[in-house]
Image (tube, rainbow, N blue to C red; front, side, top):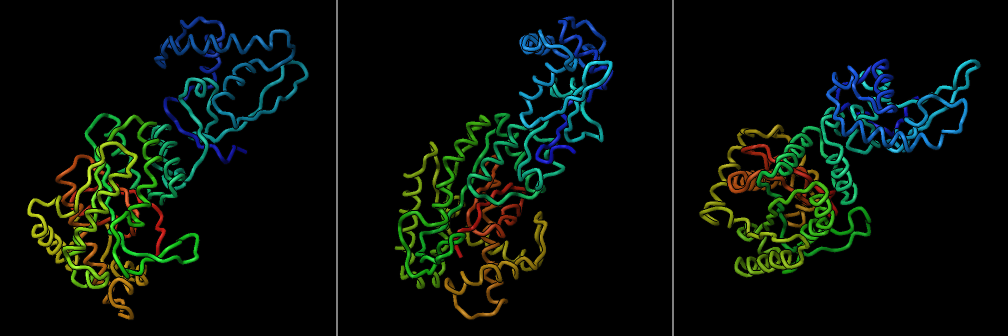
Length: 406
């Protein structure tokens, strides 16, 4: 049976068994003037490198008798696919043969030449293969591995294939040198209390407002070493922009809940934003109050949110591929949070209206960052249910960290 933990990727034309035998002979002898070399446009440097590797590998078998003809090539292949195992099958009148299994490509076992020349590749399966079964064969192996490492090490939510297409487009553009932006939206430093649950170790109680880094912002900040690894591995250098939800100071109810005036609320969130910027390990991070992104400040922000609230209420979701039932879903998922932040013991309809208002805020932000920044990707740590609303005007890829609060 094929090895279940390997994933097959076709990177070029598959070479038939007959043509493979001729190419392997050319590699072993160093005579590259063959029809197959011309047919597949194989670079002589690649063939010379394989010939040199073969010559060195073959030395350990120079005194051996009755070994499989291509055993040196199998040794070379194992360097590329460490998981590869084989059996040597003895035959009475001729040399033994090698029997091995790898996942099929197009219902065929790729030939040795296809594998050695990289036309067929195998990589260890990771979670992205399950999430992106159609997309993975089209994705560069380095990108796939780097992304999976980031998702695993940050405990992020593995994106759907639909979202994966947008993420890959963002990375491809960034790798090609297109100006790109990583956008981070954070929340004020609302007070929290422990829950005793390791999966969600704290919950907001909204008893006060601090001026340091809030728990959601801290969750994002803690990913910066892994973000740096991702950027370095792929050779990208996006602009990094962080904002904080200063607009929550416009809610008299929120200000009363945390015991602040609008003025003191705004002072504290600006201090929180500065604290985030000071503790950032990524270079040249830009930090803004959210309303500062809007040319008219608070007035422009309020008008834009109101416009999107009306649109969402009228089921005009624009480019967002979701239905209006999403607001009830958000309300149910965030009921514990909303009951502390706003009034407790209210109906689903009451909390659904809050969800609608917040969705309009995300839509407004998505609209503005689409205008203000090039090739944007959002990294979030709040509720991923709001992620689609960033794409109110144009498709903006989003990556969400698993929620660590209730």
